[in-house]
Amino acid sequence: MSEPFEPKVIAFLCNWCSYAGADNAGISRIPSPANILPIRVMCSGRVSPEMILRAFRSGADGVLVLGCHIGDCHYIDGNHRTVKRIPLLRNLLGYVGINPNRLYLDWVSSAEAPKFAKVTNEFVNTLRELGPISEEIKIGVGV
Amino acid sequence: MMDVGRHPNIELLDYSEVVKVQGYVGNFDVQVRRKPRYIHTDLCTGCGLCAEACVLHGGKGKLLVPSEFDEGMGKRAAAYIPFAQAVPLKATIDPNSCLWLVKGKCSKKCEEVCGTGAIDFEMEETYVDFKVGSIIVATGFQMWDPLKLPDYGYGKSPNIITGLEFERLSNAGGPTEGEILTAEGIKPEKVAIIHCVGSRDERAHSYCSRFCCMYSLKQAHQIKEKTNAEVYSIYMDMRTFGKDYEEFYRRNREEGIQFIQGRPSQVTVDPETGKLFVEVEDILLNQVLELDVDMVVLATAIEPPKNADEIASKFGLGRTPDGWFAEAHPKLRPVETATAGVFLAGCAQGPRDVPDTVAHAGAAASEVVRLFNQGEVTISPTIAEVNPEKCVGCGECILSCPYTAIKRNADDKAEVNPALCQGCGTCVAACLSGAITALHFTDEEIVAQIDGLLQLPT
Image 1 (cartoon, rainbow over the protein chains, first blue to last red):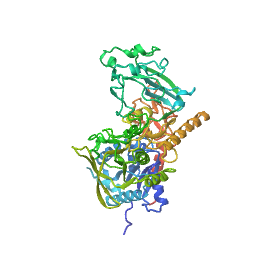
Image 2: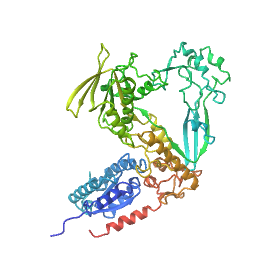
Image 3: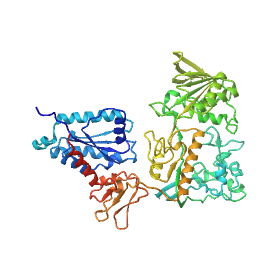
Image 4: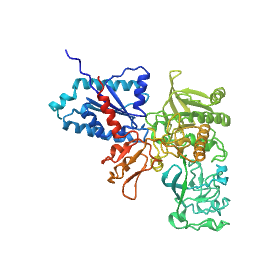
């Protein structure tokens, strides 16, 4: 019997809230899945659609974007851009045969270690159900 | 404030408004609109003869315009000195009530009596431009309007007043010369003071306005001292947070002020006698009380000024969810803002009492001095950079920048001002032609990280 499928998740974490939140989860010994591969960016507004698509092309089974809560952005309103950009990209993902649920945006502040664990666990579970991206692109699940 | 007016190094621009701010730390260009006060301040001696001569004075001490300083409880003329300690102590003419300025018809007695010829009805607004190195925003707060919550009955009886109105009543220079009197002109026998009106209330402001507990205690003490009335202080939680504050609360209790913990459900007015009834559940006694009183004082919430949006966009300030201007860090950088060289002082940043405001303002002033003494600023190396060869000049980055750090240069290309850029990278993601690089967070670096991470065995 083959080993159970473990998704690889590229997680873009903003420096001020979510990266610190992830750090906080670690310090607080709150387990979060090892499937999360974190990349620190200064602001969630820095995450361009090209970066997300590039992650999928390089074989990521899912992409997670975490930023500061709306109104709490360290850069005043950088996350306002993100909140507009991600739903649009999610809609477009369907057209290239990628299930839109493989891209997820949420807000995690530096104090929300339990939320970081919850969001990452739930997202990884969703991806476990969706299966490897290589199979999906092959059979072409559209929306 | 007097000292500010007298200081040789401080230029006070009263009755003025900042129109626009451009530039960056050390090099701000500010334009200020000076509203016409129809009186030349260099000629005015502050004698007040114009106020007495004003047609709206009405004679026999009867002035006709509600005085803003007295919360509308006192009256003033159209030509007036705002209040006795006004800085500068100069008269002004209110363009909304002056008969000459509104209707073009008046005998202009003020002009006749003015000994220095300071009055000039032809005065127009002027604009002043100057350069400054840093800016302190100390725009304060405004009182929340208690008419928004009808349960407190504000406006239904002249004896339901706000804490600020009470201050005018109790002030020796106020409309009653310091006597605490009801609208009928008699000393009240029973007074209710209601805390947290509009504060800590999901229907108005969920935050605590912070200084109302203490001024309400002071007012309870004043009522007791001046009228010996029965005073009911109706509170949710007593927040005596500062040095010696708890002691003052204890003194109030010893003076016989009745403290009732609970939130009043309603204040009603008897239509015949004008008596006021406060209905409240005393949660310590587990009992619903109905208090009949002669006067109700509402400790109303404070809120950001109504043009806070405009101020925020002029100075590049962020706002916290409750509307106050955002500091750079709530604990470690309480006076700095997201824009370098712009600082906050006082209630512009959030509710605070006098000692805290003085400390906050002192901190803001020290930050400015520190900046000027250094003579140079340290900026983070993680900033954005435009490659002019790739930039097509679409302007998308200019729209995306939260700090207005990107400008169009003479070649119609985007250009980043390194002193303003904070390095968030939003413009990099917004750039359609890939012309902007976030130093230390370049596309290549992030792609290398993605590829590297995905090659790890799971």
